[in-house]
Image (cartoon, rainbow, N blue to C red; front, side):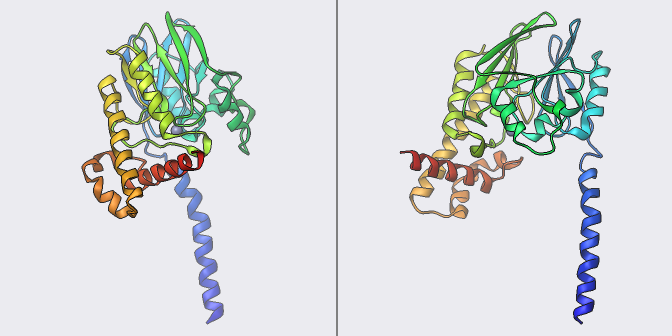
Amino acid sequence: MKIILALRFTALTIIMLVSQPLVAADRFADVTIKTQQVGENVYMLQGAGGNIGVTSGADGTLIIDDQFAPLAGRIENALKALGGDRPRIVLNTHYHGDHVGGNAEFGRTGVIIAHDNVRARLLSQDQLSDSALPLVTFADSVTIHFNGDELALIHLPQGHTDGDIMVWFKQANVLHMGDQLFNGAFPYIDMRSGGSIDGYISNLRQVIRDMPNDITIIPGHGPLADMTAVAHCLKVIEDTRRIVVDGIEAGKDDAAIAADLSDYTDWAQGFIRMNRWIGIVRADHAQRGALE
Ligand SMILES: [Zn+2]
């Protein structure tokens, strides 16, 4: 009996070991890259992972974020389909894997630019090839003059992570916000990497205060956005946070708090489900308590 069980266990283990890499490889098999024009010379590419911003013209091709490594070939094909080429410049809005996975490939021929903390966080990861690292880093802001436009790279501190930037195409009137905007969904806030809800909220307020009201916005995730969508996301974050904190202080468990959030189930359809959002607010609340 013991031998049979052991054999079964071994067989199961072998099946699991064999099938797991196949499942992982398959994850991107059906992903296609969709291209949408968002302004003069500016495009959004959507496949899997964070939305990619593109400008392509006389100075060459510049991309903002590059999704996952297995998609690099498909991304390159999409760039060529709109008249571009392999990127001369790659901007990383932050260091998360669904935004920088193509770095190793595109960094072989292009210059990667990111916030100082992106390079520092990528350096601490194992098995990262040198070509995946940003060659140019900065602390607060940088201006890039490219394809007749002026791109302002602006650091958004301590929100989604501690190394996020947004990219403002001043002529095209387009803003790529990276994961400082999950359009129509609860945001992921990476507190282990220096993020916080207060920071996330103050960054959204900064965008609303400082950016043109008629600007077109590429979010990190979700469909194309505008300033109304940013204001809506801000309000949902503030309102749901208040509900969760009230629930915590009343001693409610997650199920009871989730019931209090029943008006917001549409916002829990994406990467951050309701329990995860409640967990983020709980962790943030505990951290704030520890700081006070
Ligand atoms: Zn992210």
